[in-house]
Length: 148
Image (cartoon, rainbow, N blue to C red; front, side, top):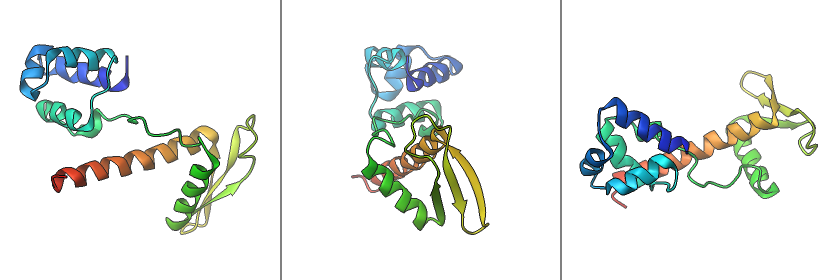
């Protein structure tokens, strides 16, 4: 099972649709709907958009991290992300970021409020993932608006 598959099944059942009927509404084979729901296959964003439209919901409700790289996969990604945070008015104050056993890895300093938020490694990962997911979704929406 996948998050996306679970959400497709949830909304399909809420709408009282069979897999076959959902497939007809979206122009997708019902066998693909089964694969999406079981997690055997991940739908493309364009396909998710069709499914979301059939449910009359925002595609974000079905969205998951479509194979984006792990936020901390490389120090280059981390460095770029920290530079981006700096441009947004935040500063990451390194505590024990490179200590794999440390629970708290540093502080996020909010310059406008002169406040610090302690971050765990999981907090840091979630923050980066949320930003990347939002950027990916906005790029998708822009491409759709411009028919690219």
